[in-house]
Image (cartoon, rainbow, N blue to C red; front, side, top):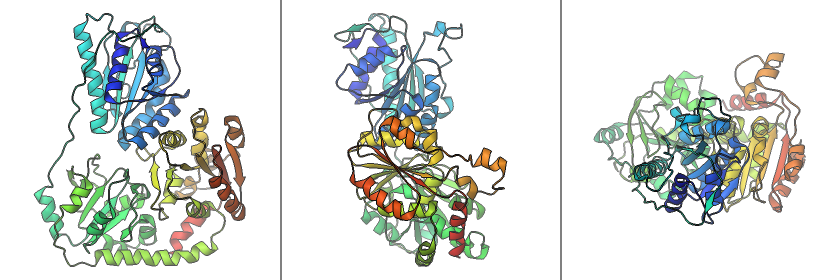
Length: 556
């Protein structure tokens, strides 16, 4: 069954031909032609998510895992504005997302009709391609049909080739619900855009050969990017120091995985930390989480910075010399095989390993706190899972621990916002065969609580909410604490729990507030898979910042 409206048929047919099969739909009337076309065609996997902000993040999570375009479909009016947080996340995280927004005909905009806003170009600052289709009333409108065909193809091509969001605004006139057995027109596929490629610049090769201290930073990467052999080769050069972030999904004996653990104890000691300054910086992947490494490399004026890979290059340290658009593996194997004499890698990996030994004494006496919870949680996670991490405190605590090699780690680090983290994790769980575990803070979880309002959450999906009764990260930042203004407007102190939300949405719920109970609850959490489960872990609000900051002081 197909919608009677011809330009709706074009979208259905082209999506099918181009392999865009996952469609997240929010209910409405104006989008009925497309809802009918997708939901009544067995080729498509359709999901009904009421809250558009959640719907877009669910689609984001599916696309994140499948690494292919996923579409979100909404009615006209304010509905598509609620997609904006996910659109910006897709833009900066380079995730293919296709927004389909139904609209009134152009002559109905700005005349006082309900659910009408100016929908064209609404995402102008954060979209790779933005278009509005022609209203096609007859198969004889060959010009309009050809125009739409070109625009739909271009939108899909752009999303695939440039890895990001596109927007197709689709005006519909009534009647909206009429159906036909077979489509009234045919469509053709226009060739996909070709990926850009480039050679490694000669200037880079010369700079690499002469640099005594080369720092490679691995940020957000969707695995697999490197094999062990690639990392063996890269780290065989003694002048190369490799640092990885938790979302890089890279674990290797010669790679420093705890950037903040290395930098924090000496960041204010100019005579010590200046010795870390590289001659050449290479970044690979997406946004960098560690604020300390960014501040450090800006403070000591990074000399030369290159970005490697197809992902967008950012002038993070204000010294970007070039973007080498080749696969990171290719780059590693094309590096010069002659190495300079240097103790750069050995000195700093040794420094880091000494910190790791020393911190065991701190862990042995560390009280029940957020830090302790993350230590225990990461040690308790089962193998072979997809680990989704919330933003703010969660991802930053995760940076302090070595990740399990069997895990793949994801977090919404494009815009680094707390909105949509739960919805994205649920989208990932829908798309994944592996179990998905989501660890998040309380404010992030409650902010996105409508994420649980759907029927697609897999039975083996787990959530761990670290509830410290507010925005704990603000206690770590400079400022006056424990005042009415701070508690109310920064930390946002509260007494909420997730128990009733879980009851309403059918999740099994458990809560703990001490270490011995946590161990038992974790065992239960990871062995029972007959229903989605949430474990809420309560920690003392007022000591978490002290425990973390004392950790860095202890390592000095």
